[in-house]
Length: 403
Ligand SMILES: NC(=O)c1ccc[n+]([C@@H]2O[C@H](COP(=O)([O-])OP(=O)(O)OC[C@H]3O[C@@H](n4cnc5c(N)ncnc54)[C@H](O)[C@@H]3O)[C@@H](O)[C@H]2O)c1
Image 1 (cartoon, helix red, strand yellow):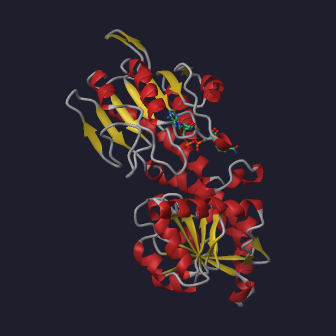
Image 2 (tube, protein in one colour; image 1 turned 120 degrees about the horizontal axis):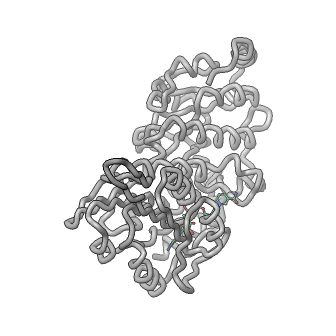
Image 3 (cartoon, protein in one colour; image 1 turned 180 degrees about the vertical axis):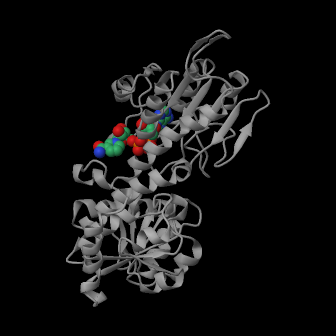
């Protein structure tokens, strides 16, 4: 989206008023190596410039998300090479963790922003602390703060993943989703079960419902029942298993509880045509919900999309991130952790809005103001001035050292 000619003029003028860069924080947007998204889209630039933020874009950074270099230039940004970006920017921003070469080039005092997964990637946190780099991890946003909701990339990207998971499943499934009565016979509606009723799961249920499937949903947190019903799905109850944890998230179940859950789920799973799994526990390996035994019970032609598939494991036996596995009984298991990247334009628009909101919150008079007393920053700022500032990550690192 572009601003009107009049607005554009004033933006460009603004960014040139002050030739003294020391009064402007300079943010550099990296071209992603492993993802199609871009952290900022052109429509964000006028707002950032107004806050005194100067933005450099690595050439080609937005191309896979439908934004070419000229669309950034029109909004007053500068296109630079990666080398220039790394040397001039005070703040380096990428969607996913930047690649090793970029990380190696960071210098003391520079700020790194992105989805850094500090709970899992403790080695990265240690190396950033040692270098004196300030790390701001977007996946650590405190989602319970109402003023942080506009900054919540986890929700915006999970929404996209939930929506796209249904399209992927429908594309792979060899039958209709809706019931169709035609002269050539009647097609039964597909039975779709979504496991995990967080942001992605609820979006998947609503999307499958809109495509005409018969949808059911399950979550280990019983309080999700009303939300599942509100998107038009039936809630599956599994007796007294309850995994509500802190802050509205699930806790990790014990091995015994998990085994009981798997067993109770099996009889529901065998009736499904399509299963979408989204169950996560923050900072932990995703729980295994669809076991090898359950997969054997599925009908040939069934499709499973595992959004939670990761290098640590997923919700489904055999699932591997970014791979499709076809079992002996012809069940297709799609490991799909990167669905937001496959809808890069919408995902980048949303990501960019979240990031802009956070950057404006953190900027005072054109300078990035790291303030670990601030409620929002307490969550996202992981380390600063060679020290870990985030309590939860500090505990995680201590725990990792003990193990
Ligand atoms: N502003 C806010 O208050 C705000 C913003 C965003 C999300 N939230 C809430 O935070 C919660 C988590 O959202 P999320 O989408 O990031 O979750 P998530 O990605 O961490 O997990 C997805 C879902 O998996 C479920 N799950 C975990 N273990 C399971 C198991 N063994 N069996 C079945 N399901 C299991 C979780 O309960 C969760 O609903 C939700 O309640 C969401 O509504 C609140």
